[in-house]
Length: 414
Ligand SMILES: Cc1cc2nc3c(=O)[nH]c(=O)nc-3n(C[C@H](O)[C@H](O)[C@H](O)COP(=O)(O)OP(=O)(O)OC[C@H]3O[C@@H](n4cnc5c(N)ncnc54)[C@H](O)[C@@H]3O)c2cc1C
Image 1 (cartoon, rainbow, N blue to C red):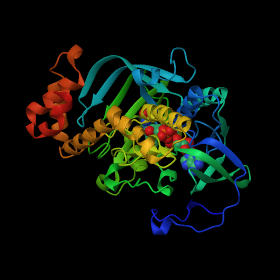
Image 2: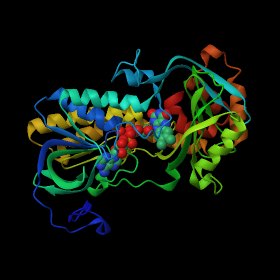
Image 3: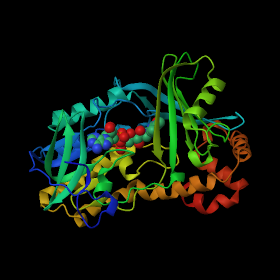
């Protein structure tokens, strides 16, 4: 048995693999592919809606929540919709301040109060998995989907794990397989990303660093992280996640790891590198079609990351919950057609997807300004009373100096 999409005329010719599939050895109502925040919330919420469903979740890695490829920062409001962060062992730090640092080093402190949290994802996702498992979902580790094929009104999914290959027959697939996910593509959805919308990221967990443990810091500038930004997210004690994202086309031939190393040497010379991770972040609006017959795409796999901030954890969870709601109702009605599931796409676009289209345009507009623009902006914003510094006012200042931003910003920030 081999992977990829199998013999369907809607698939790209080069992805068709003709093989003979063995009969399914497992059956379930919903197969969730991917044990990140999106897939785990989908599994938990499916079971919460209908305890009679059989839900299997496949995770390719051998552990839920590891390896961590993430700055681990989340907003309070979004997170609390799903799980209570008070006293939670998976919180590294509660964050009460945001600091923007301009290319020339000018700092802008934004008064925010209850901003968010820096998570410990090696404990956060296991906590979500525990809830999904307790609710009745079956979680399989070290197990991956390697291909799928339409079978009546459901899917046959080729699975490899625990030293064997087998086929699962499912009524609904939830593709929550992350930034390099293939499941939606195998099902015929277009998940390609223009290279200018793919940020390469690198991050060190560093100790022996002296940072404000109540603040997250975002540092902009072509000499720091061209096309993206550097972040410093505290992890408690003398530790912090220190990382950055760059757009390869603007990165002058250096990769994200090289930019990070230069950043760490300059700004954290005493820092001790405890771990290193690299990964991609898609800063592109949601794919045009997130559903097809019997399949819903969730989270990074559907490009649901905020294109301005690069944050995707809570978005994936929101999408997972919506997929569960729409999917459970479709299963109950015995109709998992694309037409029925299209409610998911529509509601996602209303919830966040349409905003992301505008954030993407705004990011594009901002990328045309040079470092001097951001230095000036920082100084102007610092003239606004600390208590009154909101995003709306910051963009208001930007507009006063650069009216060319007006068409994209006006609708959202002024
Ligand atoms: C360096 C970096 C820093 C980031 N920092 C932040 C941040 O601070 N805050 C924030 O909100 N977001 C951040 N993000 C983005 C965030 O990590 C993602 O948006 C979020 O994890 C998306 O969740 P998901 O469930 O869609 O996908 P993922 O968390 O990627 O989960 C997908 C899972 O699917 C599994 N999988 C893939 N293929 C298969 C298969 N065929 N079969 C079975 N399993 C499979 C993968 O192993 C993975 O565990 C960052 C990303 C990077 C790379």
